[in-house]
Length: 99
Image (cartoon, rainbow, N blue to C red):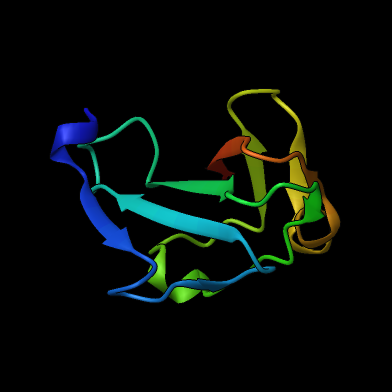
């Protein structure tokens, strides 16, 4: 159902701050249209592992969640844990809310 989502690119609709070389994409769904209210993609485009440095503007997600789950690893994070989480070079995270 990704095709039904609204795409919010970091360069058009800023929704988060991150470390250098970490980029985000936010996908949101109308209620009942997706498996999750939103999907946040974090990608490290750098050559070195980095802490994500994520500071998400939760108002842009339309969600009241305070924790996120990485669909790739099933690990959960609160905002502080995610900001300090190390993201290897040229890898990504697919994050959804735990509500």
